[in-house]
Amino acid sequence: MTLPLYLDHQAPRTLPEHGHRGLWYERFFDRYAPAQDWTVPDEGKLQWIQQTAARPAGDANALDQAAQRQLALVTALGGRGAVFKADWHLATGLGLPHPVENGFAWHPTLGVPYLAGSAVKGLVRAWVEIWDETLDAHQRKRRLDTWFGFADQPVDAHDGSPPRNASQAGAFHFFDALPIKPVGLRADVMTPHQGKWYEQGDAIEDWRREPEKVPADWHAPVPVPFLVANKPQLLFAIAPRQAAAADELAAVFNALKDALAWLGAGAKTAVGYGLMQASAEQTEALHIELVKAQQQAALERLSPQQQVLLTVRTEFENTYQRKGVKPDAGGAFMAKVRDLLDQGLDWPAQERAELATLIEAIFAHAGWGSGARKRDRKARLAKLRA
Image 1 (tube, rainbow, N blue to C red):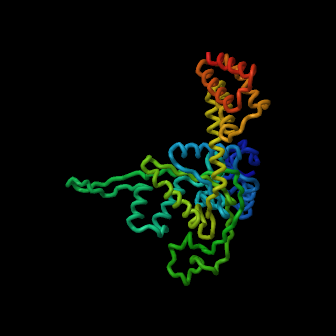
Image 2: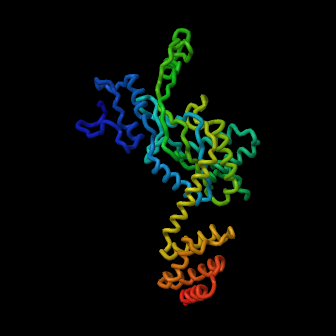
Image 3: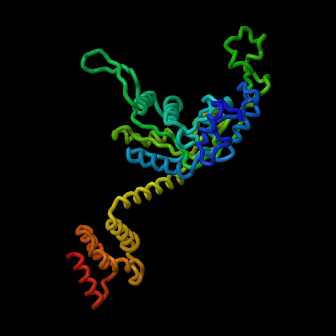
């Protein structure tokens, strides 16, 4: 394996099963020419990309946890998160340096392709500044200044003093767009016909005598392989910097939705890469999962007695009380309630009082029974309140 590393290095020969695919792709390229002159044969570039794309990138559990953390954060900030699915390929970070000529943007800890928050912000700004035809000049400038901020603009002090320059931060935080599931990768190829235009185009003296330096279709195509993400699903999140900006959050998200649908994110959008559509189903699933996780976390913060109270109260209200259904007298739920009449005697005073109130409400709904059974239950409830 030819690697530009120190002698006697202990680099693995293949990517470990749970290794960081981005780190491997960027730092352990081993397809240099055997002569160790650090040239890269054309077939080596494609082989490296195909090897990287052999398996999906990212750990499902880690990605789910990251998405939940980000959604919880943006929700706590009064913001909003939504999942968008790419129609086709997404190419991100192609301008980054790499031996295969085209880089790739990998998340530093999750090892998956992603869109940096700055890229998301730039995409929305481009839509507002250039493409949104529903805005007049005044509305456009106001949104640009409010949503994205400005620097060194003259401001009239309104007190007779000369205008001064001022700056202002944008009203919204744009978070990194993260995949919610492992991302499938593919090897793609571009075939430029520019000849030597990029290297020597600025030195052309007479294009008729130097046709090889002119970008034209008479040049033989040069296949250049590059890595792409295949139909990734990304969580986009935006939050207001201050509560006063919350009223415009819906408009910002509409701009994001239009930008992803019409402009696309990442590179090569002119040929259809990076176009995305909102996925209401995946967004709802993420929010349901978040609510369940928050409820479980809240439950775990309670004392054992409070956990029992919450569980029994929730089951009673949702399954029986709200539906007007009486629990089966011989069923598991009522058996649990009867057991709590004795177990609750050892509870702390406050929890014992709450338990007595809850059990009384349950028996009032389900029925106390009659005769000795009713007297026994009321006597045990009185002990619980003592």
